[in-house]
Length: 129
Image (cartoon, rainbow, N blue to C red):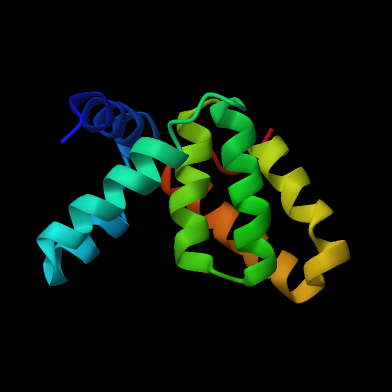
């Protein structure tokens, strides 16, 4: 196994998910198949999310946009937390969510904003100033 990928996976997971209180996908995968969980983590976190082609902030805002349009709220909560961890502001996250209303519709936007609000409350960042 490539030690560089293992280290990149650990470093990126720490950066994104250090203080995430929700169940992390890796933990869920691991409960069913430890070997596959490791392979998925090494690829998704160590190779995709660790790429340096775009900044982590940009990568997380793109992820939030996609998850909003797809209405994947549990995963959205996880990536809102990751976005905050890499320096995105609540206002930037909200703006990305509002932008997706054109493509995903207002029901998806409203659900995503509720998810954002919930994460911000849990982190003591609500109400916004």
